[in-house]
Length: 325
Image (cartoon, rainbow, N blue to C red; front, side, top):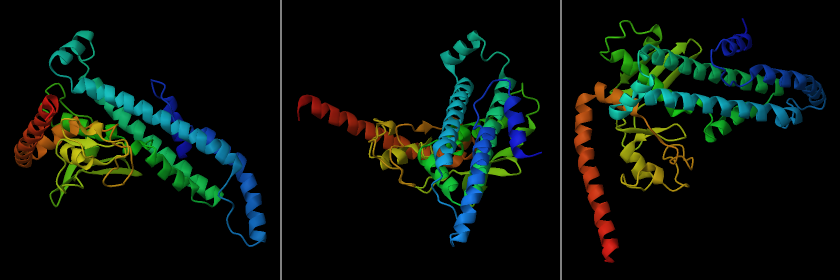
């Protein structure tokens, strides 16, 4: 069975109606365009030019705008649902009691697990669909516009594999698998596709639910070159220690990473405007804290001293400003 048919069956089989990239519609647009491309190719070969023009009026006017809308809808839906699910799982104290009273947590551990699994598969199958349709576009048009569009989508933060919530869901599955929750006698087989691995003491988060795709997220901070501590993910998809991110954005931990200048750039990819939408990776923080206890205790002591120092300096400067010194 071709992927397009599998994708359509998957999307139609969802209990809740979810947005998709519209692969069938995109293929129709390219089919309409391919005849023109073949005729242009014959003309170009006749005059000694091998490839057709990168500018395609049919695809530029309908294919890329349609794909862009689909990708935006998919990422928005995934992020919102993943955020709501993790909010329920991480609830504690009064909030946990409130959710329990509303009936959201009563006997719903298995439902949370299933929804987390469904969301990860939803993200990955749409990522495969986007990769395949852009590859087909380049094949039909004898160009690299599909790959250029993918790079542009990454800079616009609508590449679903860059979503911090995907990383959080993977950590969520591992945390549940390793928890001592008696209600989950046998974790689903999907749990075993997600794992935290160490190579030369460098951690990474991996997930391989399909043969055709494997996620491998490096958990080494590129600023301090150590395992990310109190991790935060910028909107470009890169993960750093919270204090390292604050330092790179030239803000204090009192102000927070989201107080960074809108022109501040990611220290790794140099993309600007990535701090305002930064996400604190709480599930990943729990996972690394459990898996690297010795390192975590050591970093906790070091960072506590630095945080107290920055808070003290902040309030001293506020007091001086108040008295006019």
